[in-house]
Length: 137
Image 1: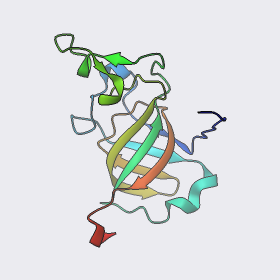
Image 2 (image 1 turned 90 degrees about the vertical axis):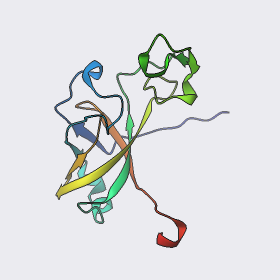
Image 3 (image 1 turned 180 degrees about the vertical axis):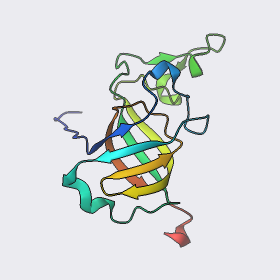
């Protein structure tokens, strides 16, 4: 594998969560509502986001370690170490977060979402729709 790759954030998370240690492990485990704040350069891409829609938010987990290849699942040392690619651990060679969230409101470049466990200031890389069955796409 070769070549250089460049990722540019398109926005950031605004959340009451400020410490990764205090964040829920998954969004549906008590994550507070948060805002996705987008760059004006991507404003046209927000046009079809509506309240009630579910989307996948990809983030760059900028506070995660990148040298981790095995973890105790969910940080539970009573469980055997597992290869990081078989877990949802934020610590991994390329710490890309994947978050399934529900859009609550859209206000210009700001999108209010439910179930986002990312901490305040986390860079947003992309947003993709959650696809239904093939006949609904």
